[in-house]
Length: 244
Image 1 (cartoon, rainbow, N blue to C red):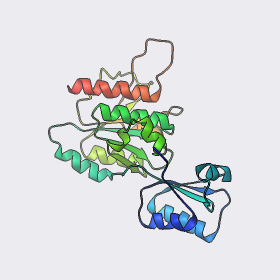
Image 2: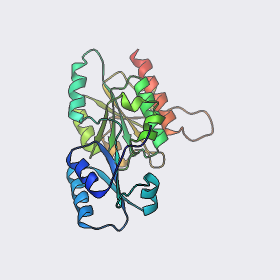
Image 3: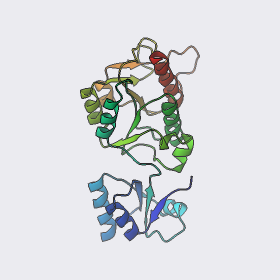
Image 4: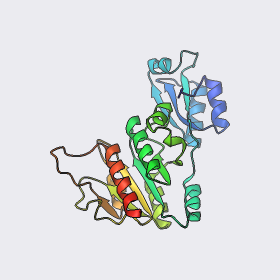
């Protein structure tokens, strides 16, 4: 899937003001013109992730005259968390299953988890707006197209979102190898939010404090843990097994 890019100061401003689904905006390091300041202000108002990068990065994204700014348009449509919850309430014959990716920045892991989630029947994926893999063509390709099927929600605060889901009757299940409870001991037939953490740091302490239970995958080999996307697949399909 080819990247969808908008480049140039005025086109990027117009795209933001038109509420296009922008994944993130790359800006040349050191740029501080009035137009760049306007873009930064609009990003703050709209909750759009922006990143200062070397000129080489921008030139790699496009050979066109980008004027120091390139916007990456998302290939998917995002959903609001309230919209997702309302839709789930209408599915009275099915206990909801939502996957939360807490600071998973690797595109291939992100895409692989989305693929497993969709295959296992998860209802939605939640990701933070910041410190997360970009949802671009590579991510969609890694997900085998799953990211265009399963609803994706980007949120400013994972913690506030989790509190909202608890208020709507869902249990929070954190996947961590440090847990004494295994996935086979947990009741995953209930309305569940499965939280997966980053490869290097795992789930943040603030998020762990909110969780109802933590679960681990039993390991017999000498390797300390599974790759996060492999771990997600194991837990998702254990959830599917319990529910069937």
